[in-house]
Image (tube, rainbow, N blue to C red):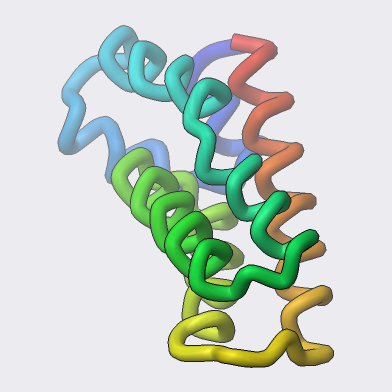
Length: 116
């Protein structure tokens, strides 16, 4: 699989990331670091404990990583979750569906990266 094909499957913005990182080799280098990033695991742990402040920080970090690499679907879903968690003190019914979408997008992203 090529880097461009990976981005197509993940519904990322290949042209955007290519305009910034300039080569497929550089894009791949940074993509390969995504599975080692701990923000998704931190998000899962924080939400399990209903620690909304930590969940917000983890979702915000995941959003940043995703945006920097133009992982559009994951960036969008993590951004929605980040905004839902911003300033929250209570766990609401809206959190679970947003988190479910992040999990789905994250799983697809990781699966594509592993196929590179």
